[in-house]
Length: 90
Image (tube, rainbow, N blue to C red; front, side, top):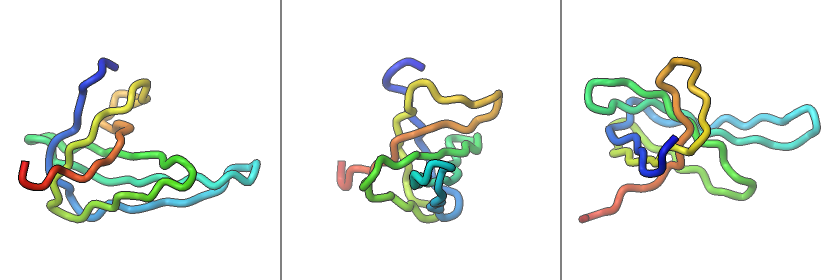
């Protein structure tokens, strides 16, 4: 995946935080949501690093999220991203 690829659009519904544990007891947190990018619905998810605070976007929030290299989409528009708050006023 080339650098500089972004998902840009509006959040559809509120993003959700899922928390679960692996068989080894490691806690995994994933933020999931949907974005309307142009006329295309895109499912996005972000796997949080330990201690990272989740960004839980709400319905109709603006989304500008860089796509993380090496995502696996299996032919579907579901991409791994790094969620960021949009710049206010610029």
